[in-house]
Length: 261
Image 1 (cartoon, one colour):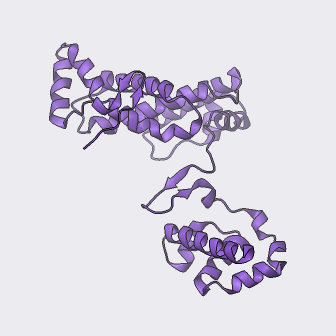
Image 2 (cartoon, rainbow, N blue to C red):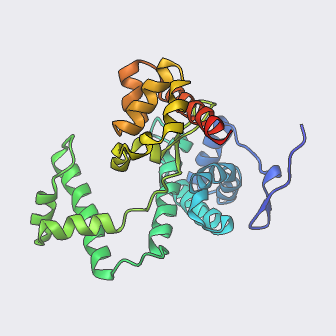
Image 3 (cartoon, helix red, strand yellow):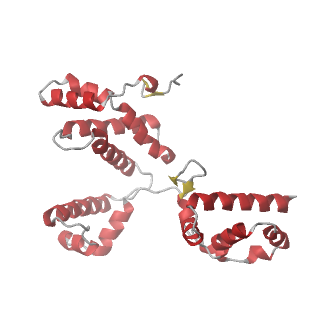
């Protein structure tokens, strides 16, 4: 099988090694016994894990080399803090830490600048949330009011600060793919403007609608006249969301061909 050479930060990704679970555990034992070269082997053996994580952030417009370097920092932190005594795979432990490191980097380098005071409130609020969760061993996160009371700030400030540090999400970011057409964020959002029925007054579109089968008409009616999401449509007519997406796209393409002919 031919591997395509792709270099990131001067690293030929096609030659990166992959460690088996037993090899990984043995290296961790060696590292805990003070054998430092084992750490380098663990880093090199898990670079593919970093590559798989940074693919989630491809649509952010960041340089891949930068994300890779930041992801490696998260990987090294994971290696330094991993506990062999916990019955969990290293990748399960490392992925959230790598993602967290990348998200912190993206927040700090976000072109939408957030004031220092807002960031301080947000990070303190997150710390208070974690502290309250651990202290009371509660199943549900503390409320904004509880966090605001501990910080002695208005609850509106806490909400505004937490919103300000959230990463923006593209409407075209895929959130599901079953091997066919992907489902994007925008497919989950009802558009109130689609309830405007002006465009159905166009005779050509009406005639195009007539040429659709009953299920296609029903889907378009629910999506564009009633403003329902693809998930809501799927639930009501008893098919998968991916099927709704495909049928919707096919119906629109058919109508376009008729109108343009």
